[in-house]
Structures are given as C-alpha cells and as structure tokens.
Image (cartoon, rainbow, N blue to C red; front, top):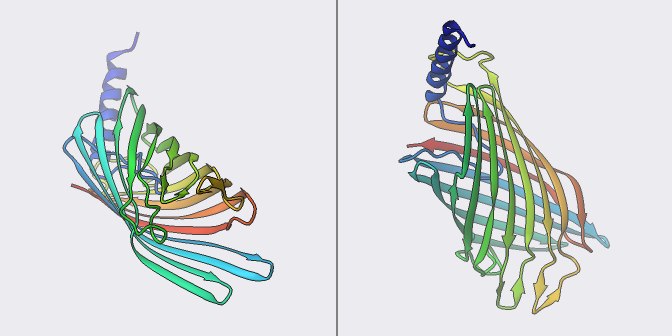
Length: 287
C-alpha cells in the first residue's frame, strides 16, 4: 500500500515539474518537423536556415552543389490530439561542374500534413505517445530548378517518449513521388531518431527561466532510382546514414537551436553526387 506521504510527495513533484516546463517551450527534433509539439488552440512558427553541400570528383572534373534554404513552418492545434502543419521553403541552388556554374533561386515545393495522436500513456514523470501523420508535397517550386513539378504524397508514424530530463522522438516515413513531364524522382523510405537531453539546469526547480538541451539525431534514408520517361537513372538512389549533433535553448515561448548533419555512410548508385554536410539553424516561437 502506498502511504499518504508518498502520494503527497508525488503530487508535489508533479506540480514542480509542471511549473518548470510551463515556463519554457518544449524540446523537439531539429532535423525533422513532423514531431513538433503543438497544443490545442496553439500556433507554432519555426524559421529554419539550412546550408547543404554535396560534392565529388568524376574523372578529374569537380562537381559541387550548394543549397541554401529558408524554411518557414507553421503548425496549429485545432483539437487536443490533432495538429496540422504547412512548410514552405525558399531555395537558392548553386551548381558547379568543372568551370560551368549555374544558379537558381525561388520557392521550393511546399509540404502540407496533419498528425493525429492515437495512443498516449502517462505516468509520474514520463509519457509515451504514438502519432501517425500524412500529407502532400505541392509543386510550388520552379520545375527542374527549385522543385520537382509533381504532387507527391507521404506518411509515417511518430513515437515520442519523454521524461523530466529528456525527450526521445522517432519517426518512420515513406515518400511516394509521382511523375511530372516525364521525370519521376525515386520514392524514399527513412527512419529518424532524436534525443534531446536537458543539460542545464541540472536539477529542476520552479521559476527557472529556460533550459539548455544537448541534441543528437540520426537518419537512415533509402532512395529509389529516378526515372526519365520510364527509364531508370543508374546514377541515382542508394542509402545514406547521417548523424546530427546539436543544441537547443528553450525559453518561455521560444526555442533557438542549431545542428550539423554529418553523413557517416553512403552507398549510392553509379555516379550519384555524395552529400558532404548540412548546417541547420532555427528559431521557434509558440503563440
């Protein structure tokens, strides 16, 4: 039998935890948006800036692609278990092949998706949630330059396990790309995981102004080969594994964060361009 004193201590601890986390925005993954926490009636805005570089040397000819993205994310919680999101990137692509340089700037393809929590288990100091999501990629970008030109669909499942000291988010996702004007990008299956661990303050206490989290994330992506008029491109597709260390500072209504995505393994087909790194910075505000 649990004594009244034990119950009293649990209630006091739960109240302290609630008071602490009510004063700061919730930690979340940096490299993927599907697990962003949004409460009922709340609006979330995240502005990301992403620099990605890929390069190699093919038969003595250097190939370099640098992509700069400003990604705006808006989320809204229309109901207790439901969240809807819109993601719109502005993209600048700089391509160098030998002495030839081409550039393109404009809107990228937008993502619209919804998430619904189907399972939740809470106990003192810990919670577990399962949430499927589904959405579409809308061809708002310039086809062949900053977008694909096709209306694509995607979906997956998010699992979140959180305690008073850390949050672990994972997702499995499948993207079904469709054909547009003869070109069809290969479908993509991926698995992402993110651990956000509170570094400071080391002990919870009511009235703290913010929290510093250390973040480590991992991604495994499998890409099918692209097709041009039904013919597979032998220099496309493959498997890429990457890790992303980062940091987050969570204040009362906002989070500032940064991470570096580093490829640790790549098994690409033919002469597909190999990724070098991505640098991600962002600011998230809850309204």
